[in-house]
Image (cartoon, rainbow, N blue to C red; front, side, top):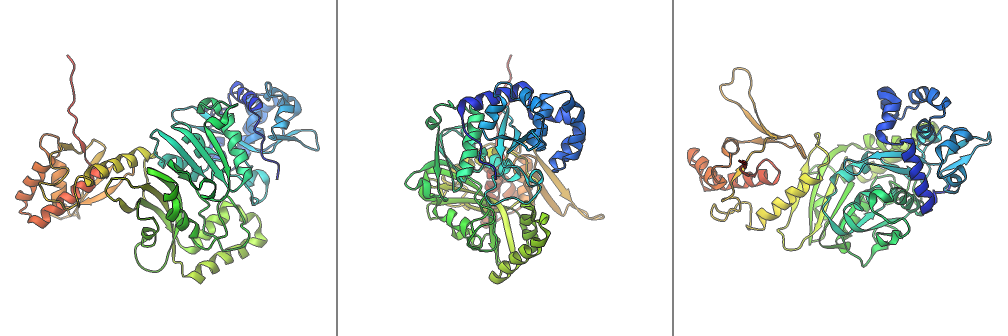
Length: 527
């Protein structure tokens, strides 16, 4: 493998100027390549892009040169490299370890540097190791991933409220740290791989301007710690932790095949240990968000084991997004590392996965998101959802709003079945927001609807079944009457007994927490 890129602040500032001058941005790349080649590149197919770039490269187009060099991993001429690296210079690019000179005298990238478009802070650039397609073989052990679907998902579910201290646990290329620097005063990054830390620091300095980081005083906003999992930050606490840990469940072995995704531990032991001990590094009220996999054995709920892992003072809200049987799971991760390129070893690796799961009786592997919080004075929050359908990313704001609603409601009452007088929502004026729709289903010839549903068009996109009473409350919730008055009227109309009325209040509370009801805010008119 090539050495990790070097973090020279002045040189990285010059590289940034060259990227800006060439228009090396997400939109400009898409415009130059066109929709067909762009879509093919997203599928890791380079040929359409090469065909499009033939003429711009011949004309010495700097943007075409950057795409060819850093995205396609094709060598470029020295003359084009001199044009691209106008401020940095080719010698400066060599000193940064981002290019090398081939035996033919051409300039070839040693890293992938991709554009990363953000909604509010413009484009950033992210360096990582080259992909299997660029390398022409399966990924090496110390491979440093770039921005992929998992890292984007973690960024989209992480709360973005302002915090003092944040931790990017297992930073990889540093993409979570860059997001955290946009709303945290100080960010600590850790990784077992020094190579990963080098990439992360390189990327932070390359994007220092967007991140409000003084490249010559990095320590003012970023602390870099090498070590395994929580060891480097023992004795510290953080307001927010974001982590995409090496959660992949691979056959146990003394030496890991890919450190970016697996540890050599048996089964989901790493995820269990992290969830069980993360309270030690969370400040009171501090939150942690992580991606995780967990094993299931035989019958029972998918979260039976997951429920037992957090410490007593930890809240947990876990969402299973999908699951896979052992064979599917093996195929996913063998493809992830491009093991299929090594046909001789693919079958053996597949066999080891299956033998490992069979030996331990694993029937399914869950894939999902876990939110944790070190509880202060709030009511205990333990929620487990299976949400396999599409969500409306980013969901972080919706998740944060639901947690705040939960705290407001359940801290004011001892249980979801509180009496009408104690019910926290009783005096609230609520309304079903415009993004919530009502659906009815019935068979042909049926006199009345047989299934009533509410669907949310934002956030988690939940689709929940209603009974007649809850549908009536949502239908009447227009903000004029308090929800307590509406529930009392519906209970009287449907002749609900006390137990049924309590169940209705509990259901309305859950719908409020999940965003199907919002506090009514009358429109104000100006004269």
